[in-house]
Image 1 (cartoon, rainbow, N blue to C red):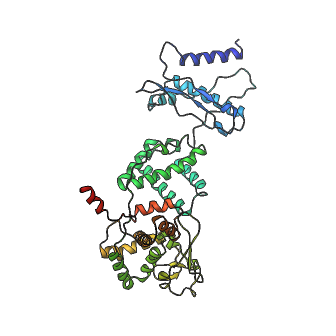
Image 2 (cartoon, one colour):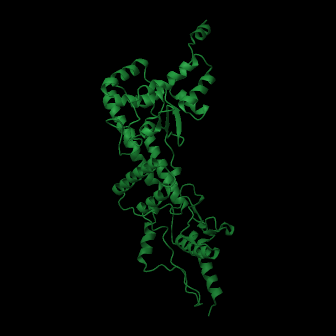
Length: 439
């Protein structure tokens, strides 16, 4: 009767020789185990190479982790990986091809009552290895819920809402176009590219890129927590997009708008003056509450784009237009649809959207302004005015240094880029130079 060592040797040689027949050009390498030199802080896995059908070269395939890295001892991980390696080698010998759909192989395996994972060992004290687990049993919905649960601890409320909105649209698209998909490991790059193409067809390259970025961010969380084997979304190329730019208003147009709003919509006019005179962004104005206006020091405190809290002076030109705030509820929202300083229980992004739509209806439609003119245009217009006024008595550097204190830009580089984007910096008339060249 053969002993245990002879049995193992016999099985090994059968497995090895069938895969490593030197008379035939092999399509795959023998699977190997990566154990990170015993470092349990790193991920262990089984890896192999397979011959690419076009190049004819052996190319490294995606490593297989399974649940090996859930084991906290070297012995535990290695025992699982040894089984993975053996099963993978058997599948390769039976015709598994990572570049094909493997339908025929799946049918053959399915028709068997049971796929043997190991041989019976003669030592009755040795336990049979556990069956190989699936890569993951987490559904697509469960995986994204898991990713959001971790991500929401790191992002703002508005960013969280943005993630949730995009994930919802993505899952709805999957449900409509690929209803058979259930588990997260079934998602692949081709499917996500298909969804991004769908977004592109319905919107713009910029919107498509935003979806790619947010989905990739969630997938990175899943990858870091070993829910998926790789974040293939971050390998999808970003499309070149031309950003929409709000143009500055001409002097005449801006003055006409202000005169029109004095009678038509004073609340909207005051809202615009906070953008124009204090250089706040529309959403920053929407965040303001009565208590953010310091009456004694004539300052306004607000949450800015790149900092948690900023303070600016309120110029006299704006201060004289403010109503008496002393009798108002300090926690009231400064700008609401019907009055200054009242309750308005809706998210700040909804407030911003409300005033944007109100501006379109009241002003843009009346003056027939194009898509590039909006509330943000007032910020560009008045920063341009101040900068050109400063240039009359200062050098460009001195003018920008003073302007930084007014606009709140955190660096000279950021301010200079902003001024270039809005065409605030224009050269002097260079006709003399052209004339000299002509002569």
